[in-house]
Amino acid sequence: MNLRSAAKQLAKRLFITKTRVYFLGRRIHHSYVGALIALTSFYLNNLAGFLLGVGLVVHDAISHLLVRYLREAP
Image (cartoon, rainbow, N blue to C red; front, side, top):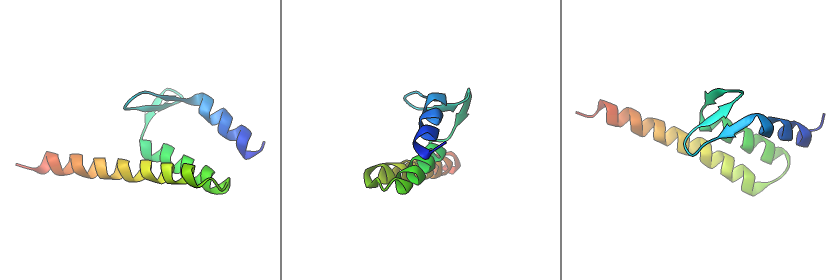
């Protein structure tokens, strides 16, 4: 199985709502999806997809840090 068909099979199992991502019925973080997009795009030499994937990972990390900071604030 080549990478394109593997990516298509993976896309069939992903369910994305406005704020959540589900894989095989389980909720996963956007950073996992971003990392998958970044790795696949890097392999396929797709700069736009790579930057999108890295942006998802960075966005997820910043939002987690912001939520943690706001919970600890008095």
